[in-house]
Length: 237
Image (cartoon, rainbow, N blue to C red; front, side, top):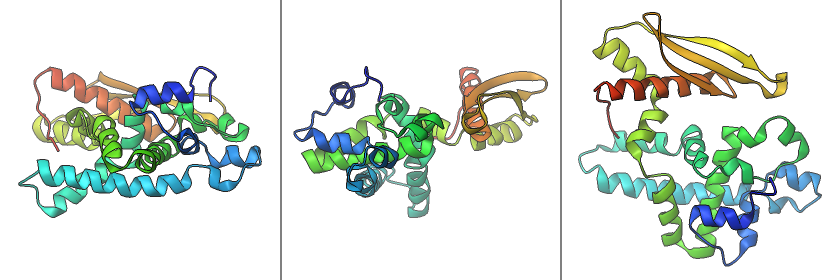
């Protein structure tokens, strides 16, 4: 954790102050840190993640059941999966700069763990579990509604950006498009990729990510925002 990114600051950002701050510290502690510091393995986030995942599934299910009154069970299942998947939770966590707060071992830090979607999304779920234990279901639900189930139109656009762009370009616009790798930087164990998406020789979006797939997703999202500004409408949850 960067010295500037304190437990106190994180509590301010999530809008919840713990009675037992050790729960929040556990929620942001990776197993690599506990191993390195020779701390009891139960001191990392994995058990809280297990609990938070269950709470998140219940809250998101209730949300879709209530708001999507005409949505069949199969569609609700599909949408719920997109709302709580790894890239979706990591995207939500970016508003909090959550990666900066995580306690990592030196090896995990050196290999880019702070920016890894799998770790950040796990910590997001662990925070849900920690809030549930500290403040009950209502407090956990408030956090989920504020940081995960808010602004769903933009988030859904991001979650499904590659498929949405394909549907729009090949369906409504009848245009071909493709992704190009612009740049690959960093050491082998911690690379960053820059990707552009082109349509008819015109760049309509760029993105960066720790994998080519993540960079393509960012580029597709940028393209969709550009096309939305031009008046195209996309499917909503």
